[in-house]
Length: 273
Image 1 (tube, helix red, strand yellow):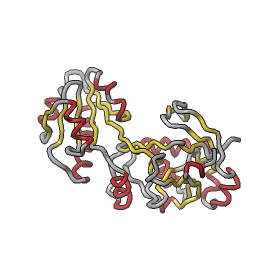
Image 2: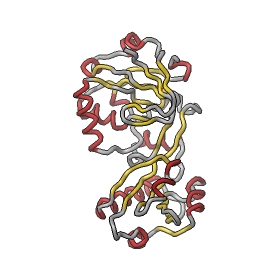
Image 3: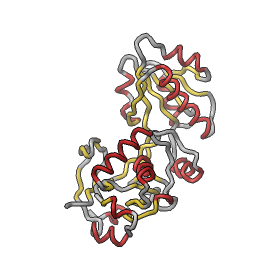
Image 4: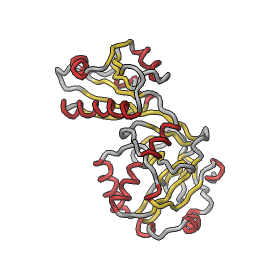
């Protein structure tokens, strides 16, 4: 299946021209940079909106390139308006310590109103509230409509509260939040539904979302370009095309385990060597 059939384009882009829309997790950048140095290659492309250069997938790869002083990256440009690119959310999951009370913590934090769980999900989807803390039988929502800056501050306040309280933090896709909600001692924080315009605006202005807020599903998702790091600083798009041909790759089905992660969309393996 050629990339062109999906409306995607591979190319070499200067790292400095790419615009992240989310913050990163520093330890993930360090780990990824170490793996890249060990493997001596860029395994997967950075996926960007072709018009704005907003990074849709690959924020940590971009930061790893900067850490390693690599000036170019293999990128896959997509038409962000295409239905082949879907935008969802990650949910933050916090595991309380034994004896900790979420209700007490939220009351001490202030600014949250208790509502039924179904009402919270509906208000988030209608963008009537910015952030909700969800439990198995109730929810606490932020009051009124928040600006982008207020939304970011509220989400980061939960991260700080978790760090101060010794709570574990993890992430799940929004359609899997029912699993942690059914588990004792866990609660979920979810942002209002975000739009593609929100993502592009964050990238253009540099007012980033917190790490792991947006989740992009790209079908088919291009992976496995396997481009040598030693060649990237002087690489050209013509050389990339000579290496990978016309982007004809092997398509793997949804649910494939690749690089330690199971993907919901199809994968397009570009380097067949």
